[in-house]
Image 1 (cartoon, one colour):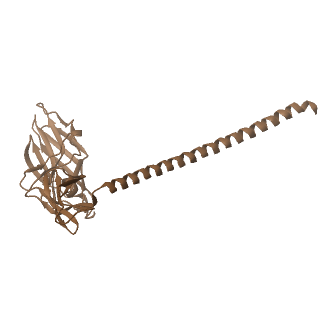
Image 2 (image 1 turned 45 degrees about the vertical axis):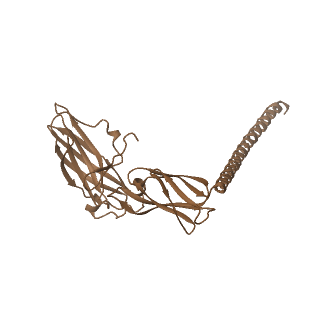
Image 3 (image 1 turned 60 degrees about the vertical axis):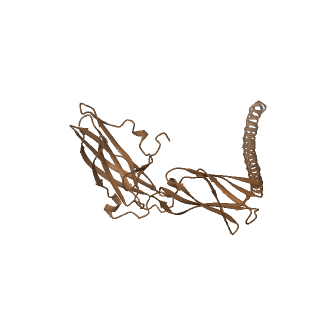
Length: 312
């Protein structure tokens, strides 16, 4: 019996060690959980403190402001003949004296006097449709005292009012013996800032050879051919399968031209193929620089109204 005591003691010691290790592991898990909970609580406190700072800062800024309110909104349809759009600017000062307080609005196009009506100073300015504008500040003059309120409001009527279209072309391209074959799906995305996602009035594929227009093809979306689709979908697919003549040493391009409800034409480059003097053809290796870009915009007479900056 005595000779088995060491073995029994060793077994007991191992059991105790295993129990201790289990308890240590359990304690480690609890400590990890406590650390995680503490970290979450610290994060929540930090977020609450930041929110308090933000709220206090906003209240201090509002309290120091000369204005009780301000509002800016577009009015009417864009004036395509003058390439402008009307923006109504309204500010409500906290203190003013009717007949004595004179308000002046300063914007990127100059300065303009505002008219008082029912406690609100208001004026309409004509913003350029195809460039960005800013409303910088408003001043209140009364009895020789001039007070200024910074506004720093920025407007981009082209992106805020007009639809935008993006096109991409997948599939295959091949060329030999002075001909070029292009087939695949032309994907067309419609982005309408006013939320209507109205479909374009027409979509045309234009062929250019060495910068000279050679032909036009009206495109019909695949869902229209199959009778499916919905009138407010934001994407359309067009199937293209065509062969073109491309002489040696020429550059062949395919552009998509879209006409919107205002009669504006949006033109996007979707394919470019070049051949050398020996007739060897290849796609444009710099296609990354123009694929997916914003469209150029023309009026109904073909006059260029807007061209995106390729560096932006």
